[in-house]
Structure formats: C-alpha cells, structure tokens
Image (cartoon, rainbow, N blue to C red; front, side, top):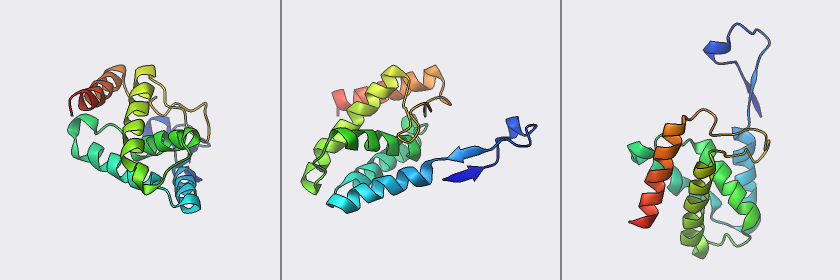
Length: 137
C-alpha cells in the first residue's frame, strides 16, 4: 500500500494522507491468476482497453475494474482460459449491477465506495452505455 499526499482541495490539513490500495489489489489479482493459471488479468486487460477506447466509459478507472474482477473471483472458481468469454460477460453484468446500486465496495476495505467520485449522472451514463452494449452488441 502506498501513502499519497492529500489532493489540493485538502492541502490545508498537514497531517492528512490518502492510502492507495491499488498495489495490493493488483497483487491480489496476479496472485490468484498465478495460483490457478487463470484469466483474471486478461479479462481486466480487455475491460481496460474497452473503457480506454470508448469516451462514454472513460470515467471507469483501472482500480474500479480490478475490484469488479476481484469480487467476481470470490464468486467464481473456474477462471481457466476457456472460460474467458463467460467471465468477461459476467464482469460486465456485475459492473452494471454495481452502477445500478451506485456503490462499488473496495475488496480490501468494504467501507470504501469506489464510485464516490462519480456524479449520479456519470453513473447513470456508464450503466446505460454498458447495458446497451450487452442488449445490442
């Protein structure tokens, strides 16, 4: 875990630090894949590429997508390469569910909502875009 300086809007608080869980999340994902030769990292890479190339999905971060995969990894045990398409679709459906709820809890600290920096409008737009992509591929 990495300690980061506070954002500029909170700079007046000298002793305030943010904790980045991103390294621990990534390490957990890679450890799971190394343990069973799974396709979690590949599924994440595909999701990140799609979100990066689509302006409508640009608000989704790598950390948020990693957490979706980690949550799904707790539910699904078979992450073999031949299950990639199924797991990818499940990840999209799970992401839509989190967007509908407006909450994506961190895998390492469930009290943290990873959608907290998104506006309700952005959450609706992301959910609608993903829903349409599954309904009319």
